[in-house]
Length: 288
Image 1 (cartoon, helix red, strand yellow):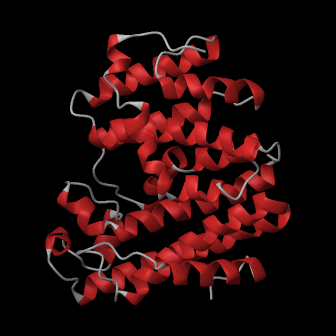
Image 2 (spheres, rainbow, N blue to C red; image 1 turned 180 degrees about the vertical axis):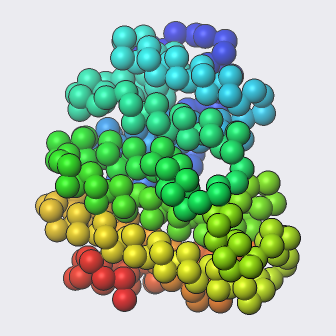
């Protein structure tokens, strides 16, 4: 399928710019564990998700308008005539894997929300955002492999939300510098953390207590979702274990940093990630 030139969509990030990130991000890296054909489908899904995120985070023009353009092009993918190369690449996967449009629309809506919502009042509101920004990817993976069930989707949602939370907790300082706070306002009040503390060079004791609570909460959510691994087989089970282990090692890195999420984001070393992968394969449901 040859993409048709179209001025608005053509102003979106190019396929090359978007896929250049594929070398070191968790999703495409984990996909290397999977059979070639499945990997091709998952990279098509990744390309779409990355394109939408790049527009939502970095596009220099009217981001809401461009997100609307991408949604229109997504709809064209279901009619057989998308215009952006990455959406054109997704079209065969949509057909072969019988993927519905709603998970893709949710990813676009999450990025619309990022343009309009910079604070979350409650944890439930934040989880609702993760249901748009993260959970659809897990659903799409299960659909690509033809293993979607109600039980698996519930566990996948837990894993995906926890992974999104872990990323937010690593990036508290960076997000605050960009005007965004994902820590729920109700938790800031409960731990008596003024927003100004998030602009400091080092975390105060109350910030550390707040982050310890958030790390514990995300770990518990991973534990609820990790039994998904036991319901899968082969390389898919191993790939999902790698995702879970990545979340656990990220949260452990925050702990090891002394909950210093205001400077350079704490990242897990390769050794820490490998250790957690081994633990997760042996005991999927336990984070300790």
